[in-house]
Structures are given as C-alpha cells and as structure tokens.
Amino acid sequence: MIPGGTYEGIIEGHTSESDVAPEIIEYRASPHRKISSFNGPKRGITSNTAVHELLECPVCMNVMYPPIHQCPNGHTLCSKCQSKVRCCPICRHELGNIRCLALERVAESLELPCKYQILGCQDIFPYHGRSRHEQNCRFRPYKCPYAGADCPISGSIPFLVDHLKRDHNVDMHDGCTFNHRYVKSNPQDVENATWMLTVFNCYGYQFCLHFEAFNLGMAPVYMAFIRFMGDDHDARKFSYSLEVGGNGRKMTWQGVPRSIRDSHTKVRDSMDGLIIQRSMALFFSGGSRQELKLKVAGRIWKEEA
Image (cartoon, rainbow, N blue to C red; front, side):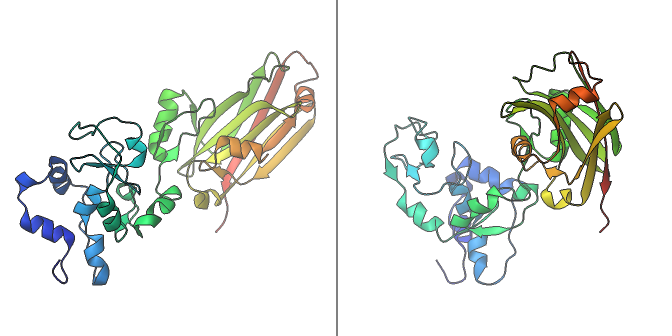
C-alpha cells in the first residue's frame, strides 16, 4: 500500500466494475453509504467501506468475528451460520472447515461503524469493541412492550406504537390522567396471569400502563405499573401516581416510570409498582368474593428541570 493511501482507494483504482461482486457495486451506489471525512491517522482505517462489506456474513448480514469460515472458493461466512448450512450460499460448493485467517488478521486492524448507524448512531469502534457497544447502543431498536406473549417484533417507538394498535389491539388514549377499570368474574383464578395494557400519549411521549394478576409465592396479587416508551434517561424526567380504592379506603403509589428497555418481567419481579393483595382487592370491590371490581386512577407529570 502506498504511504497515505487507503485500502478502498487501491480497490477502486485497480479494478473495473465487472470485476467486483454485484453486492459491492450495489453498496457503492446506495444512498445509505457514508463517505468518511476523518483527518489524521484514522482516515485510512475508517474509510475502508469495501473491507467492511467483506466482513458482512452473506447469510445473516451481521459482521463476522473469529472464527471466520470460508468455502474452497474463498467465500466467507460467520461461525454461527456455518454450523447451520451445508453448502456455500454464494457458489453452492460443499462447505468444509476452512478458516479465513487472512481476513481475521486484517479485521483486527479495522475500526467499524455501529450497525445502528442508519438509525442515528455516528460512533466508530475498534473491531472487537463494536459488539459490546451495540448491546447497549441508545439507537438500538426497542422490543415490543406487549406482555401477553413473547412477541419477537422490535423497532422504533413510532413503529411499535402502530404495531401495538394494529397487531395487539391495544387501547390508545390521549392525556396524562386516567381511570382504568378492571372487572373479573372469578377472582380466585390467577393461575394464568391476567394482564391488560393501555398506551397513553402524554407530553409528546407514550406511556404503557400494565395491570395484571399473578401469584406471588402462594398469594395471589394484583399489580399496576407504568413503563416509558423511550430510554431511561428520558424516563427519569417523569413521575406518576396510581390510586386504587373503595369502601371509603384507598391505596396510592408514586414512582418513576421504567423504560421499556427493562422487560415487563424485570419490572414486575422488582415489585416496582402498585401491589394489591387479593383480600384487599376484594374489600375494595365491596366485600363480595364472587366478583372483582377495581378502578385504578392515575396521572403522569413532568418533573421540573
């Protein structure tokens, strides 16, 4: 390599478009490709977009980390995908157990952009430090907050709001105060966790109100709590209160909404919310043990900076 040159510059200066794989040509023309403008010694490393592309597994499209495998014709794939396929996804040649040591060595000297770059992350990391960052990148997609099933959907907040409404039939409400009514004809049955989810649009953000029944040890309990659809940094700007009562009595809870980065199960198991024992819930319902009638009222407010 000539002094001051870049790997990408050599590739583009000594090959024609007919010699380059179609996926590389498509990437060069993509509007999502970023041209680096770094100065100093990092320029030759951070602008190696062609080399970065070679590190993408053709099966899962994730960056490959050692051990990187290759077929007899030199096509590479990651170790996870290599264990799941029998032939090369490019040339269909039968796979062996060949390591691509040259690419592994080259990769160690690279710095790579976060895979959530298209979502807004502009950070660049050493090859082996990238995956650690991505696990906690603030631009990473959010998981669906619906608690009724292990929903595999993830995405941006606007996408998830639409997903909750369209695919889970979740009720959407505008406003920062609410009255949530819960009626159950057989309050003795909490074997299958009964849950409800409502989304509130408030201060330009979305908040999830969870209400459910479950067994805490041998004791049936009801629990209500709020999660914030966004990161924990923004969640701490808000507070909320919940109130449940009847027969002239009431219970109140005040707290800070948890981010949906924390799973529904994690929040529930930490008891971070309004917890009502079944005996108290039945008392609030009028004393009858035949039917449970609870009204949970609450409000959300923004803390002063």
